[in-house]
Image 1 (cartoon, rainbow, N blue to C red):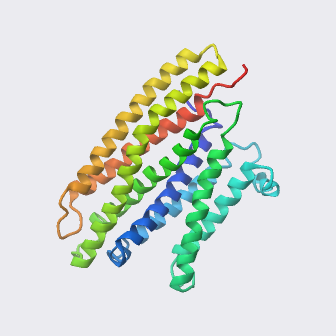
Image 2 (cartoon, one colour):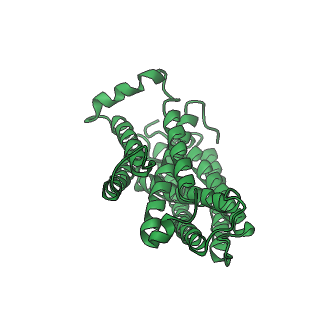
Length: 307
């Protein structure tokens, strides 16, 4: 199960952009749920994950042209928005990136009232969801039975929730624990850190639970697709998929355990202690490993109907 040179850019593009969209949406949901406390948990605690998610999206967008024979001509795809799902994907990605940047950028760089920024954040959320939907639509091809299933679209949304929330939680934990300086946070800031992290971990756990349920469904879809395609190497491919699916389930369960440990641990007045912060980062590493295996398998194990 090895991706080719042309497939690695697609793996990077889909994983990184989905994680960025999911992380921004997760932060938005948590801040709406937790209220003012999560908006100001201390210097850099909110801005750090936003900046890192922006960088993640930029890298993913840059990787998207890596599989093209003429990367500099990628912009020409925008001329065919009505007929091409790929053109729509590119347009939505650009629109989301601009709108999200305007909604979270510094006030002295991106002027606007709170109402304007809230409207932009809502528009960015809609565009982000539409972007992930468009990614799934591209792969719903009758000639690729393993792709032409609702599980493809669900998987993209689940990856966004799992990787995005885990990434935002890890950056938040790092900023709160190791990058916050020597000054102890105020009680209000410590409460804000806890609320922000607990909300992000709750989204991580929910997404991971859905992922555990989705992996066997993907395996069944792949089995039916292989039978429909009747490829000579199908049995060997299925064995690889079984091993990869088992590894994904185990990694996701381990991520659930790490996230639950961090969420249930009593956080001290400092906001988060070292074992909890380490558990949050381990959660991200496990989720990233599982998502990478799943996405590489998605691109490499795809029988073509009619061959």
